[in-house]
Length: 476
Image (tube, rainbow, N blue to C red):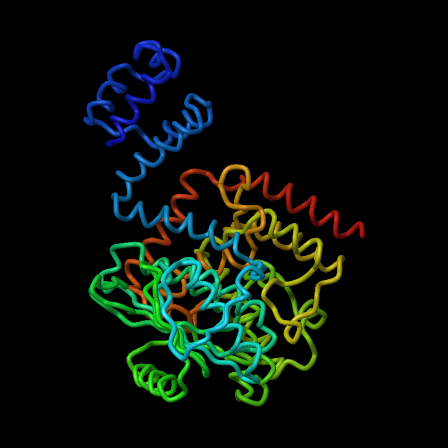
């Protein structure tokens, strides 16, 4: 439905004549009629004013907003914009991984080849394959090509890898990107990949004109390979075949490995944080450390050398070079036209409570003491007053769960900046595979959507909120 049609329906649902609606809202009667007929578009500031004055019910507001911005951005682009919002919500609810697997632990194969015929059986077999490898291998490795659209399989795999993070398993996961980037596929891959990066697992991509479409005549288009088993399966039909014969497992593993040259790594980082000093040169080690520290641009951007000396661990490789690079990075981020940095209110509260720089290993930074937390927050307030675009998402207005992490939202939103500015930009080592132009526009649309709908605190509210948090730190 067009915005005019939705607008007309919402007024009718109020049970009042159009003349009375015009009188109550102060809108010109002719304008209301032309909007209904599609001859004119309601000015955006007028729509927002109607929302602020609670003229419509929340459900009606959502319908009006969706119809209005579908016309502003275009239907396809708005669909991808809304996907970004839903993906942030969904993946935030899945961190940290802590599922219960007890009901799946009874499966054990009795034959070298076993057929899977249901979803519950598929998950039970997958659990067996993963657990056997992760429990019994000193250096566990896994390989798969399932699409992220197979959410049950993906959530299950992510949770298992999270529980065994201490063993540092190697997981080679290849996914398919759509060349045109006109659907939500590429965005889904980006969001799904981010959380694996946080577990220090890479994701690999290939480009296809058809995306990750699974041909209906393919019996088992997906696989899970370990050093002991191969699970061939179809994630939509929930059937599969488990193979345990060593010769067959080795043959299939070699065949899959031969395809690696066709794949592009979506991220570039050391798979073992503790081996950075041995693996990298001094300069490269500093770049590696910088990549971790830049997960919190706002907090890191307002530190001086004295603060960094307290926060950063003394044995970071190339420590002085790391500090120089940090200043250079944030000199760009704080330039004449800084990009907006979105954060959640709950994320700042978490920092105030713990002093931890999220997603930062203890090898890089120690928790900031209370006095330093307060000082950092004061500096952010000063930067906001000087024009820095640091925006706090309003938990009451934007439907994201309270547990959404400070660092995760930035990792996702600033993809646009990294793609635009190249490999040396913030998070520039990520996301080499996706259609850059389309993806950048999608994230720009999403950031604009948040700004235009005022899903964030006002400057005055932000300063008051951060000021209260800083006072709380300084009182400890």
